[in-house]
Length: 305
Ligand code: NCD
Image (cartoon, rainbow, N blue to C red; front, side, top):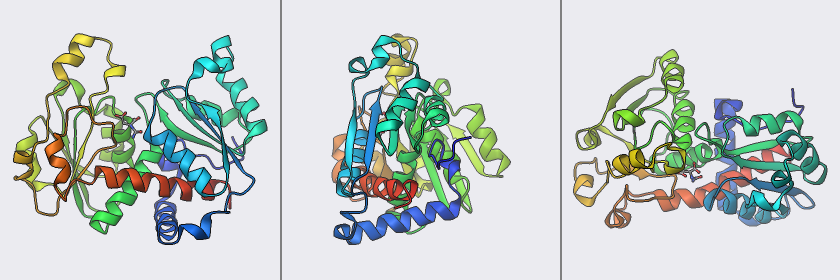
């Protein structure tokens, strides 16, 4: 067992700790200058074995805004992985240089494996189609700031529920809050994995599964859209058949409650028409901004600063 606190899965934090992180992020948002030397002298290693825009940049920006520094790569062919180094050896090595590691990898379980060998805290920035806990922290802060609560919500998640790691993390995490109901909207081929459904069923969470976006919209407080995860398909033909099954348009938004919010972890491909961006209920770019502040709070927590 690692002697460090890591974030591999959202359940690594208790509900109280999640509220604590949100409160910390809100304090940072209201007076960012108070935190600009919080991580002075600390180094974050950012190891991206898979493409990223938001997650990588928001971690880098978060560490720099806390006064720390960042090393790392976003192209694994430039690291010793290309020579055949194991994840265990990379973890042991990098943690000799850095105080905290952020890792994204196409293979499920890699962040957990790294945390077993690293001499510093490890944060999972996405492991294959499994989990993406820091996107979930971003989502929680967005929901709190836009809806004022994390409980008593009907949440629709739409798109690629099979491979969408942001969805797996968000759904299992939100199921720990009071009176959450889910509507899972996907084609049958991309439905929610059994392990996620089992976890929430154990918590007596109500959920329905449908392939009808339009009839689901009116009952939702939150609509969480997601991209069909092309890189995780075995067959390109199957991807092409499923990629555009759901497209949220301004017309469909007319069916939604006046205070429903639309979220998306981004990147967007076709699943939200750009005409929706000007709807005040579209929160996905605001969500991007919250990602940096919650990651500042997370780094601060894991480094005990
Ligand atoms: C997500 C991811 O990488 O899982 N992006 C992100 O981190 N915001 C979603 C996606 O790629 O579809």
